[in-house]
Image 1: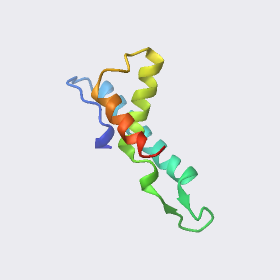
Image 2: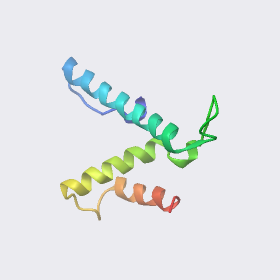
Image 3: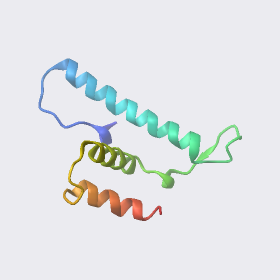
Length: 92
């Protein structure tokens, strides 16, 4: 959960709870993706998950990149875009 933690200085408990909820949803999406697409031996009682296929941080960078493209953010600037492109180059 701490990998997707939103950095904030707000003291509003409702906002903070919302941010924790978003972090938990992102983690559950990551787990679902692994069991849906990256399991070895899909039909065994305890499937072996291939964590190297999609790291949680890579998924977060991918989501940030897609949101940035949708909002029209300049793709040539920013550490996150460069890091995302470097990470994704390994999987192409």
